[in-house]
Structures are given as structure tokens and as C-alpha cells.
View 1 (cartoon, rainbow, N blue to C red):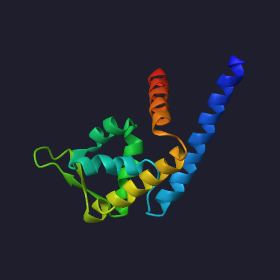
View 2 (cartoon, rainbow, N blue to C red):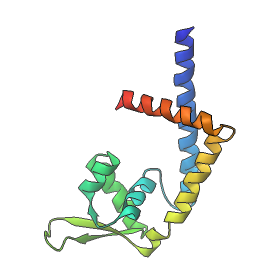
View 3 (cartoon, helix red, strand yellow):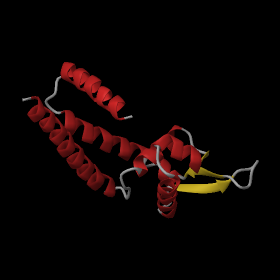
Length: 141
């Protein structure tokens, strides 16, 4: 019985994760973003003027991945890169007005996705679910 339950849990997590990512990806495309770029922008909304290495550390991504995201966001006019005033080798990343304007739509899409996911789950069940998910996260990281 244990093996069956464990497999059911893994399969359910896989299905939920895949469906959420597909739905969320489609939702972000409506505002000209891809999954991952929203997290990069969220870091900049908390305070821009940081380096790509700082973004790598925050996002836990490899530098080429962040470089590609930055290039794409820059091409779409959401961010700009400027040389650091102290060290000309360092590029700092700043939000443009267009990038700042995305904060509310992205937040709305996050909340929409979360509401869909947690629909019908009581506040008490959500607390238990959060604790279980945090434990699983610690097991992996």
C-alpha cells in the first residue's frame, strides 16, 4: 500500500506542477513574458540597480540563463543595463517605466494562479499543505 500511495503522491505532484506551469506560461505570454522572467522582474521591483551575478544568486540560475532573460527583457523594453559608476566592468540592471508597469499585472496573474490552485481547500488545510510542501522542499534542497 505504501508504494502505491507514494507513487500517487509523486504522480499528482508531477501533474499539478506540469499543469500549473503550462497555464501560468500561457497567462504570462498575454503580457509578453516567459516563465522565470516574472521572478527576475520581481527581484528588480524589490530594488533595481543590481548586477547579473546578484540576479543569478537570487534566482538560483546559471549565468547564461540569466543573460538570456536579461537580453530578452531588454529587447522588450522592460529593463536597461547601465555601466556601474565605480567599476566600468560591471553592468547594473534597472527597470524601465514599462517594466515597472508590469508589477500589477504579474501580481494579478500570480494571485489568479494561486486562487485556482487552492480553490476548495480550507485555511486549515492550506496550513498543513504548506508545512508538508516545505518539508518536501527541504528534502530536495
